[in-house]
Length: 259
Image (cartoon, rainbow, N blue to C red; front, side, top):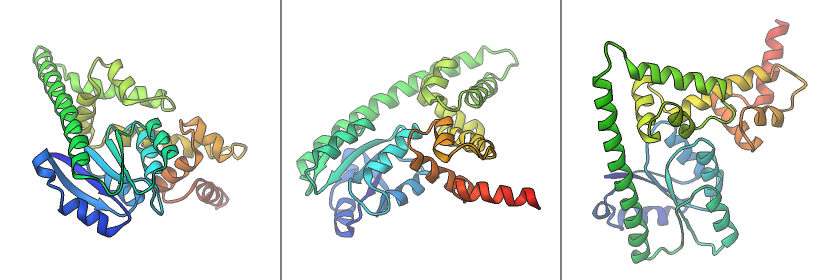
């Protein structure tokens, strides 16, 4: 079963989606539901999901903002937007963040079935490719003589991220170590206990904290220097990591220096 997260600010719609539609018949299991993008993002910080079925307009954090944040984090989660608005400008924005589809409420049974049948097929193909690559990688590991190849791979990936945090991506790291991105992501999590995307954020945020010591740099400049084109997304991620926004962090560091 593939993991599905449902996000919609309308409780009735959310409940109907979760309870009425026969998801398991299509190969999906609802792992959680949320009423806005922020709740969904918080869930994804410590849980996995293969697909999001997400309302496009919500308070606190919209579906577009959530998709943008996941895209920035390089999270390979398939997203289907659900909205009561025939807003094609929003639909075009969704394409920028690799959203899989856009369904207008009320969603028809046949349309949901068609969209998620296609997504299930794509996930099956990706899983089959991952299994093949994993088997190949395991065969290569067996011929290593007393050398822990996986540890060397993780060390190389970490070094790559630390030196190229602004532009680093899972795909680029995978290319560096001659692995499929999905397999490297799984290996990295098994070896380090954290997802590649979380490690990348950790490196970016620690570097951002160093840069903020330079009072001549504005927040948007620091944001760009660590790879965030959107200063709002940077500030949100920084606050989640340190518990303070960049300005509060800079002020607290200045206070500590005086002490």
